[in-house]
Image 1 (tube, rainbow, N blue to C red):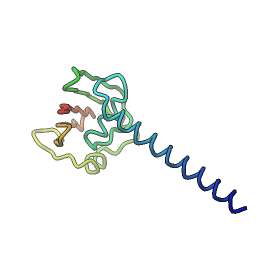
Image 2 (cartoon, rainbow, N blue to C red):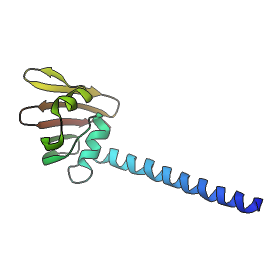
Image 3 (spheres, helix red, strand yellow):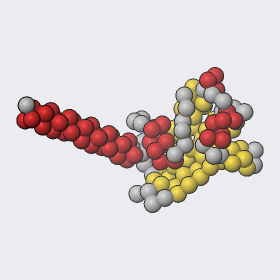
Length: 126
């Protein structure tokens, strides 16, 4: 009986470790994608920390070193003031802006609240 409990626990722990390892691996893969075709929104969210809500359209250009994406946000189910506050945008020169830099990424984002266009420029440093 004790042996069955031990084996069951070992299987559960092994499954959880494999699942967590898979999630970490997928996150690293998404983080490394520098193009516009795969995981564009997810990569932008991971690199900038900005939540990209449901969008109506996306325009993206990338040369593998710099990527510029413009997202037209679907405002039908989004409170724009709350979105701006939650993502800590600051109002400057007629646009809401946010930027950041770390060892692997330098980025800047601008949001036009009237047209709901969020433009994010990401420079891949590594």
